[in-house]
Length: 238
Image 1 (cartoon, rainbow, N blue to C red):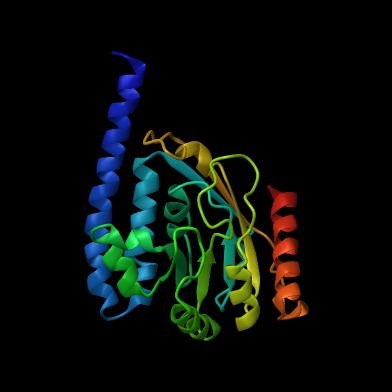
Image 2: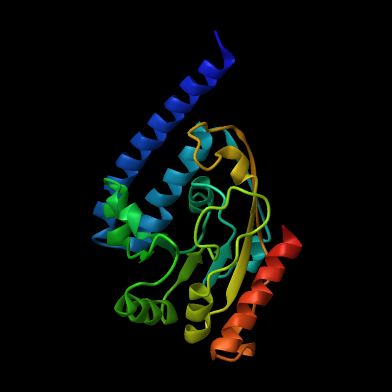
């Protein structure tokens, strides 16, 4: 049998499993979130991520977990693949939310689950179109939990980094919430952007030291300085 055909069949099976797991755990998450989004985050969402990695034969290694603590934090990560969220969903020990594109709300079951859990939604380019949503987001994050933000604004299939969007740094500074850089290595090799071929492999996630945002002024120049500093931290550790 042609090797490319075999790979295609295997990928179809993997996507089918991902779809079944997403529907099953998505429905459970919706039900549990009616009572406690936190319990859903730490149970059904975690098992969803773990099982996807298992069935796709992906080995995840996490380093620097001691730098992660249960307090309001903005975790910024380099976004390479759909598998980024499967990976960090599978092990996060604390309640968390993520900043996602509004388009994800259109996915059946998944969209309803992330909405009822209280995740945050931005435009396709990572910008903040609705200022009222930004105000609500600022209030929630200031008194809330860990939030994942991809500062590049979109998946980047190429080596290196895209320019960081300002929005996440504006939120970090206005809420006085420290940034925790999270470096993801290998996820881009699992699934190329624009491809449906899921490959087996290794993914490594490394948590670096917190960046103290209060040491930067809250004006436009200070936010840009924070953005530039964070970009350099990622560049030096990729």
